[in-house]
Amino acid sequence: MIASDYTVCALATLMFNEPKDEGILGATACGLVIRNRVLAGWESQNWLAVIQNHDKYATEPERVLRLGDHIRDDYFRRCLAIATNIFEGRERDITCGALRYCRLDQASEKFVNTIVRPTRINPENGATEQIHPRVATIGKRQYFK
View 1 (cartoon, rainbow, N blue to C red):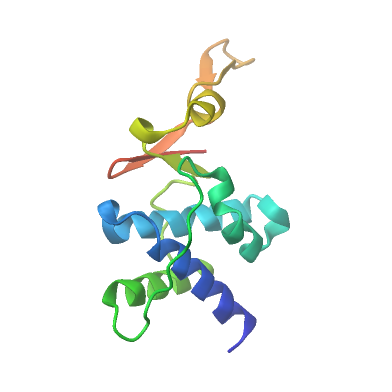
View 2 (cartoon, helix red, strand yellow):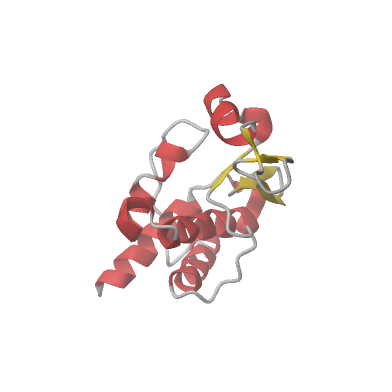
């Protein structure tokens, strides 16, 4: 095993632990948000630190991650294959570069007040725009820059 294998397994485990109501698409989106955060320089572009701190930016409370069975569990094997593609930059970004996401009906007041609602005035045209624009909807989750 090499270091990148460990990182891919950690990413697949995080994806595997996403709520299953969005299926493999939701798990893929979670992994892509992690990649977007790494590319944006979060946690000094350290994949494992971004994965470890994922729940710090989540709207749901922290959770205990369940380990997937790479031999008997088809869903975990799919997460592992997609995590490999995400880590190697081969997976198309269905989140449009999102850095945050939530189900709006379950979002904390803090998330809504810091991510969903804040606006600013565009100095070029005077229009009001979102600070963290909504860039995608995947299932019941909304994705923000």
